[in-house]
Amino acid sequence: MALAQDNAFGQPLESQLRSCLLATWMCDQAGYDDEVRATAYWVALLRYLGCTGHAHEVATVFGDEIAIRAQTLVHDAANPAEVMRDVMAYATAGHSPDERDQIVKMIQETAREWAVYNFSSGCEVADMLAQRLDFGPDVRESLRFTFERWNGNGYPNHAQGEAIPLPMRIVHVSHDMEAIGRLFSPDHALEAARDRRDTTYDPALADLFVAHGRGWFDRLGETEPWDAVLALEPEPHRVLLGAELDDALTVVADFIDLKSPYMGGHSRRCARVAADAGQVLGLDDDAADALRRAALVHDFGTTVVPNSIWDKQGPLTRAEFDRVELHPMVTEQMLRRSPALDVLNPVASAHHEKCDGSGYHKRLRADDEDLSTCVLAATEIYVGLTTERADRPRFEPADAANELRRLESDGVLEPRASRAVLVAAGHGEPQTSLGKRQHNPGGLTRREVEVLRLAARGLTTGQIADRLYISPKTADHHIQHIYGKIRVSTRAAAALWAMEHAVVQ
Image (tube, rainbow, N blue to C red; front, side):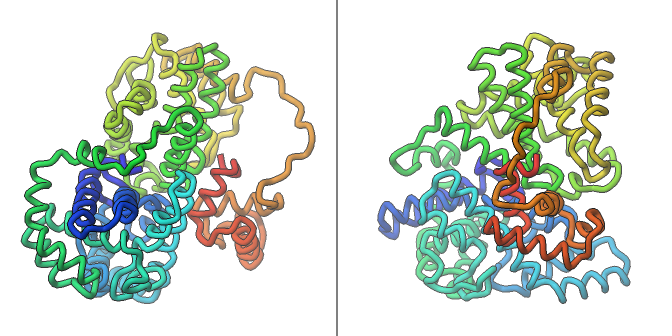
């Protein structure tokens, strides 16, 4: 997830890498042991691992969640008045005076509760993903304090002082100093370190940065961050192959799909349908593995498009669709950073190309020379059609199959690939016996599964009640019971659990 070109927190990739370098240099200068150094390294890269988990909620209030997060990136998070000032300005921009008054009143009344919930959501999702990536307790414990601050004015638990793990205290300094130094100047960063010592930052760490920061900024200017960060990776270096690589890419897929409630399980489902279609076509094992893995990460670039676009309940403007069209290009940029992932690019970054050249982002004329690319393009359409979107209900499978057949006849989709996807999706093959009644994961009842699916899609308690013809009180009872059964406390964590257990797909 540190591969993101501009992640859902509005932080560029280079910034994360540079922050990691500063954190490592701070550890070296302070003489911290290898364990602290290693933990700070990973925490600097994974600090916003849970950011897609609450992108929808932030966008609901502010519209472009990436822009508002980028705008507040360099603010003093231990000074609520400073952050709130710009939050108010951003939320009310473009509104009439009466609307501005209502927005200000709403934010004032709900800001604390909203902040606690959203920061809790980010931390809970980060912990679930870090555990699946097999990071140890030190990294996971530090990530729980991502949004806490030295003086106790952070969220969600107002932890303060040395209750915040040392690696995260280091990253609080390295992250902010990098952002301020990059967006303003090293002098501004050093001044902020002096001003915020003993409030936002551990005073000893702030003093360390003031003493050595100018030299570190000079060093950053002469360093290629990507190569330098890879060279500093703590020993032993871990290489992912086979099933371990598949597991890690599935984590990436879930990180991507948490971005919007309408994306839940999309990448997993594409991987499954595409792999089955590859089997229908008789692809060899290497090609089949590459196709499945490409399907898991093909939508990486969606994380840089704001939820104000993905979750818009209506047609997109030309300018908005221009941003959508960029996401395969960003996927390509992300994957090519790593030679091991770049091999997936010919398929992953071409998932919206069409045989007639009407696709995007390169307007290639996909053909049968690479069936895997054509399979993923057809899979993306079928899975997308059979999923509810913000601007339309889901297609019935038979209607989606007819649409694929129409696109094939119009020369948009490659015939063999399209037909293989239809077979993989259950069209054109005899229905198999259902066999024994299936048991729901987590001990959930049928009704609880229905409620969880809707909650994962971002519906409020009232909307769930309306959709299922039950009272809001009953819907809330179901939600609380579900959270208790699956041991989560936020919508994003519940959505992630639902993806992992194929409740949403």
